[in-house]
Length: 164
Image (cartoon, rainbow, N blue to C red; front, side, top):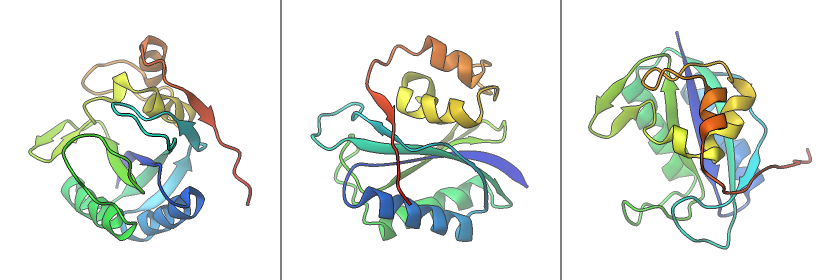
């Protein structure tokens, strides 16, 4: 059983419904959700959009291999209405990124773990730091808290108050 951290993000559609459905699919298909950060409203990173993103990090335990998790998360993205127009950043209903898979370092074509730009993005580091501040990045060898302290990203990241 491996511990992994996954980032959810999206800025189109009924975000509360999409996040809720995505969490349910991940729990049924990937593994047990053991921790969830708050949901954060964030500015788009790397492109312009009027639609703000929601981002959330979850901790999971799974018996699946990283390639199986990637395949499953890509299928969930499709089912949630994700369309990939280009290799560039774009608005989307749901994006699911594997941030960490234990302390493994994986570089296999379409699967790079740890995610290569964690340390550059506050929209990843703020929710990740909420649930795993002392987790050590296996490549950079710094804690998530230290990476957040050193992050130069100035984009807005604000906690969302979600009503039940």
